[in-house]
Image (cartoon, rainbow, N blue to C red; front, side):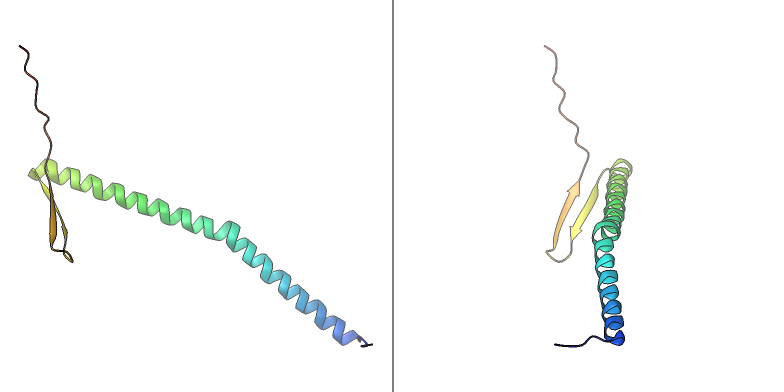
Length: 90
């Protein structure tokens, strides 16, 4: 049998405490920190999308059109205001 002295049990306790602290840190990151960071990123992305759309609408209102370009594919999309045809009463 292996004898456990006072030094070995003290080391074992320290190792177990370190493992518990590491596991608690992983759990805290998984359930608290990462969701908070993801929520912040999604919030900022949503704000950026709304800002860009509002800017495009403003540009269409002021200039009558706006152009979206994809430089890599050499493709452009031009947005103009749509005025639906009026039905004439007979």
